Amino acid sequence: MLENYLPVLLFIALGVVFGLGPLVMGFMLGPRKPDSEKLSIYECGFEPFEDSRMKFDVRYYLVAILFILFDLEITFLFPWAAVLQDIGWFGFWAMVMFLALLVIGFIYEWKKGALEWE
Image 1 (cartoon, one colour):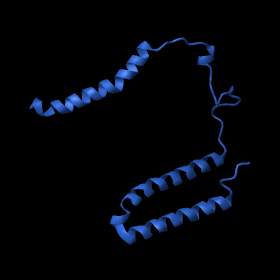
Image 2 (cartoon, rainbow, N blue to C red):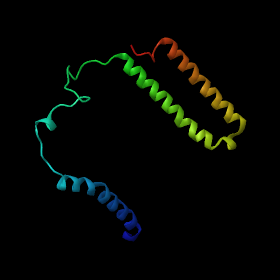
Image 3 (cartoon, rainbow, N blue to C red):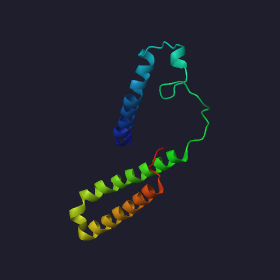
Image 4 (cartoon, rainbow, N blue to C red):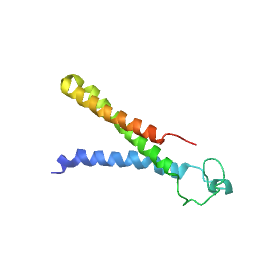
């Protein structure tokens, strides 16, 4: 019975060794020389000037949502392009409609000023 599970156990053991081995080696062999500059708070290359719990401007969230939206669009385009010959004209026009909806949403966001930074 054990010979059936031996390859799986060996695979798990090798995964743990290759995953944790470099971390343990880095912890044990890496230099530890903390000083005041290394232990200080770091924020974009300069000293923090406000509380870390301050509210962000809403434009930050709009840009983040737009990035996610168009990033997801690309994740749909690659598999679609790979199987375009198999899905035929129906798949082509379905993707054209999908892209048209995204372009309409992009134009709407553009007209609303979500892409403008003051």
